[in-house]
Image (cartoon, rainbow, N blue to C red; front, side, top):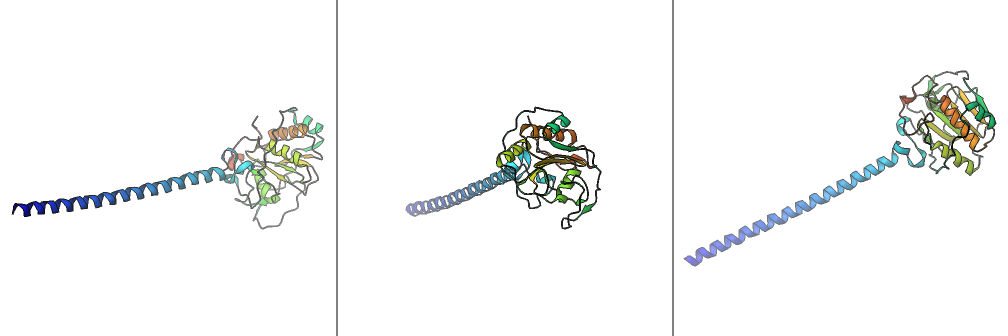
Length: 260
């Protein structure tokens, strides 16, 4: 009789141990699954942060193009992510003197050609200056986002940016790669609230525009041309157009306060 009770107790003990072993194994499996899920979520979060940093306009924007999409639209225009050549220190800080030495035409306070908005599919109006400095332009949100581009955006896109105080630096695609990279290097120091792109339609080698203001240079003369552009930006950026320059987001050093 005693032996039978001992056998029953032993059988029950073995059942308890089997159940505990089963529960422990299930718990380990749940814990392992939890670790895997947490790791997957962590990787996804890190990847999302990396993508967000790479695609944002902060701290330089997308690559070396400084595209700030919170300031407008890229309108399908390819960015210019080339590494520019750092510019020399300012040599001539007087706008009229720098423009004269660089052989540039300086036209300030041109006639305002209007502020009418049109859809992005509308034909390009006839402007009185080339490149244009004011006039009918695209409706929001198709204003060209701040950034450097490897192609020329439509003028109706860039004019809306100028209306909000932006500076647009333009160059002939015939300009040598070395000179283009010098302009890109200058742009890298003042890209907040500014644009850079080639313009095959203008009669200048290099030009800079703000709303109702134009600096047109028939040739690129190196450091003095860079001085003229910098001085033009300091004198006219954010001051013309009738719309607040900070009405669209600004990221980075501006033409008014460039990076030294």
